[in-house]
Image (cartoon, rainbow, N blue to C red; front, side, top):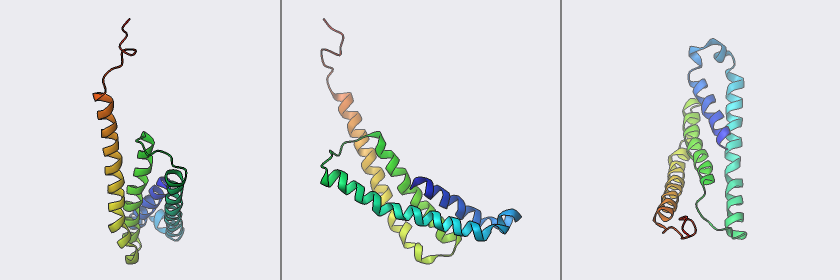
Length: 138
């Protein structure tokens, strides 16, 4: 989803600045179609990822503990928000504008949850007393 969001953002920025480059201006029909396709594919991933998360943590009862891998889920949420906002501006798609206005809170909440879990994990590791086996004694 992150790569598709980056592609959408790049396409939206090219569309907005096409008047400065003749080659880009000539490719605008293709560029608009490809950018919309990238956004649609990124959007399609959202319910799939939600369902996989529900399956993993709800149905399979996988423990919800901090792992650095969670940052790879936070980034696409923020990138999707920015890409949707820029696409709506580039194509004058006012109907899309509410999506980034609300989705930014989802991205922010995911970032805060991941950052809090990371800091909590670091604090637990740093405050945990050293075990005798790891101190090199004996």
